[in-house]
Amino acid sequence: MSILVTGGAGYIGSHTCVELLRNGLELVIVDNLSNSSLESINRVRKVTGKGFPFYEIDIRDKDGLKSVFSENKIDAVVHLAGFKSVGESVQIPLHYYHNNISGTLTLCDVMKTFGVKKLVFSSSATVYGNTESVPLVEDTPLGATNPYGRTKWMLEEIFRDLFISDNEWSIALLRYFNPIGAHESSLIGEDPNGTPNNLTPYITQVAIGKLNKLRIFGNDYETPDGTGIRDYIHVVDLAQGHLKALSKVVSTTGIEAYNLGTGKGYSVLEVVSAFEKVSGKTIPYEIVERRAGDIAKCYSDPSKANHELKWRAEKGLREMLEDAWRWQENNPNGYATVNNKPLQIFTRS
Image (cartoon, rainbow, N blue to C red; front, top):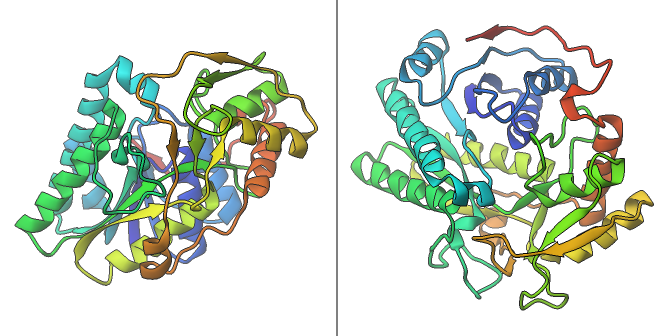
């Protein structure tokens, strides 16, 4: 079975590709490399020892996508491509709506043209918005508080309308919580462009000396230590969730949403303290104003995924932080690390 992975060069995408390849699936990867590196694709091949076609294409490029489907027999799609920063989405909302929504509509049009109606979609816990009802379950009323989250919410509704119009579609909406960590090989991990938007790479870059101190956005939330609480999940556990969801969508029809999280929340300061114990490093920090669109606490009830997908997050916070720190130590400049020798793989653009 051949799977198209959009956004396959990204943080979650690269780890998901590894898990799919290790389970005997053939891949075709599409990524425009706007927030990722071709070297991550090289590293996926090195980790798995397997080859695959890669296309440097933007999913808004309909002709480009048509060429991918024409040149490959695609059975299903894992759709991960999209912009993902909450703070940035508040600053440039039209950029997010155009990229995330228009790109997905183009992808679905091409899928429909080629009769491919099996889809695993990268959604987000941000679709739940600012709710005091935690842990979050899939039937919690939705109401995103920022443009990024609204793109995911809107797309979920678009997919529901798509299924109503054509019951041959099978779609899994995976509501991610907060992926952190890295592959145990230290060959792939999170490598953000510029200053990190996410907590863990910010911490590890402070620890490695690339950044002077951590900025904590708000300490006046209604939480035990005043900092925001999130459900952190190891990126490999998350990647394995895609494999389980794919197994379901290829064997049935319908549309279902699933939380992918651990069901436990940690505050920012708890994560900082845990990282200091793992790394032996002291992380200096300063408290700054809250970010627009952030909420006090967000953690999952993953029971539905546990029962229906036979999936469960296995790795704890310590292992997540150990793997994140090992990746950073071994790749101080991310995929641009000096003396890195890229592997040659098949590419087309």
